[in-house]
Amino acid sequence: MIVLATYGFLFYELFVKNKFSDLNLNILDTNLSIYILGVVFFLMPLNWGLESVKWQFLIRKVEKIRVLTAFKAVLTGSAISFFTPNRIGDFFGRVFILKKGDRIDGIFATIIGNIGQLFITLILGSTALLFFLPNINNAYLNFNNLSLILIAILVILINLSLILVFLNIEILHTFFSRFKFLERWRFVRHLKILQNFETRELWKVLGLSLLRFLVYSFQFYLVFYSFGIPLPFLSGLLIIFILFFTLTAVPTIAIAELGIRGLISLFVLKTFGPAELSINIIEANVIAASSALWLINLAIPAIFGTFFVYELKFFRKND
Image (cartoon, rainbow, N blue to C red; front, side, top):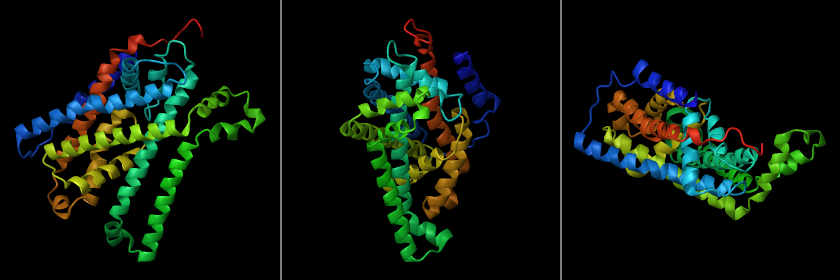
């Protein structure tokens, strides 16, 4: 059923809705574009490899597994999350590969990694917004300088708070433990696993999340360039940070991101891109670029993930 659902959603999005049929692309150099897209494709294993190393590092508190097993689990989670809201299936796709470890503990360990990735996206995205704050102010806000300084300070304080919260994530267990009536809830008891992570280990999780964020941001930059949307390197990466920041705020089913990514990419590029790009931007190229990255980073890993679905242990003797 999982395999059929994954392929069914992929077939529907690519062929029934026919997302790529009406694109009239204006690519500067076809050979160069193919070469760049090849680089993007070969960065895909690095992207998911970093996620696998991070998950293996986290899940060792529950069960020690090999990196290859973690890689299979991550791809399987990608396959199941493909047709579930907000990728919730990712948790189940991963923990059902465990042979002995407690699966609910595994889910909480996975959540720690996801929170770390989320916080990195929010921190870098909001920091990138600060660089464009004067432009945003001139176009929309018309605040005075003092207000802009206060906004910048507020964003910095919020980002520092996110890091502080993540590094003290065990507080969640302490907080819920104070309410005795919650003890009968099984998930509260499993929060105890949060106390097993030391500060230096959580810093490592943030570091791996940062590396992965930079990899897929660089992939997006290359994809834009290959589709005839050249961006200055530094400001272009900042724009992509904002793009992922915006995507994070939109609840979606992963399959639906193919359309949503294109619309958000178009909006962000027109809002924050250079003036000449905003005027001459080719909408079809933006949609094709975002769709290409979706295909490389989400659809293809999901297809590979279906090959490992049969290794999941839904029922175990010790359960």
